[in-house]
Length: 267
Image (cartoon, rainbow, N blue to C red; front, side, top):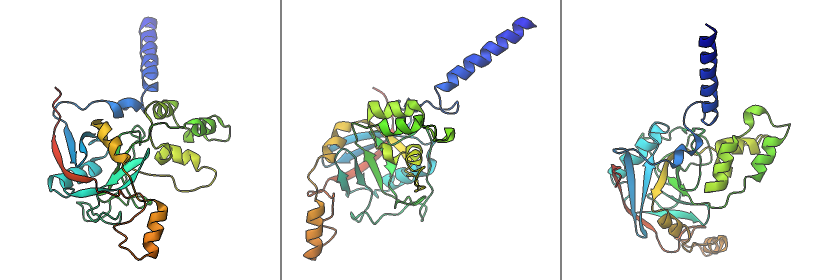
């Protein structure tokens, strides 16, 4: 009996240690960077500057993935531009109007955020864009292009005695931001940590995909010349068409020719 009890205790200890590297005994933090399985749904963005490929997280963000995939299949994104581009931050598209104010979901209304602790706005993440409020997702999306990410503020707050244990961010997540890059301030858990002293709303952006090929094309798009804030203000004064001159809008259109939805087949 003693042998059995010891064996059982050892098994529990091994299981506990294994779970420490996972999120709630679920997916590990680096799951986001794993390759899809054969037959999984992927999207190939065919743009005026080249192609890139994205995998989806259908189990974690089913509504966001369904919305995007069905829009793509219907040609909703064909001919749409990346209307907002900020170097070393992100490229944003999905608005047929090209103003940042348009777009609709397949559900006929805005839909809820799908936040999962082990999916984050790391470099290459495909995320839902919203209106700066919870559950305001429609058709717009953005892809993160950040490279060097400073995690020192989050680490400092993690170590503070005044930070509640439940608000501390896993070091594994911060290590991935430091290694991979990303928009750390958009991370729901990190922005909650940042805003503890102010009570401000934490950022929420559903991460529903990850670039798995062609990140060099995404980077090239992120570096195109864009209109500055001064040029935007001048256009306002001159009463020019505001859809033609907007801050961070590319001076020459970067067009999504089409988005092909297909199955992943490793070579």
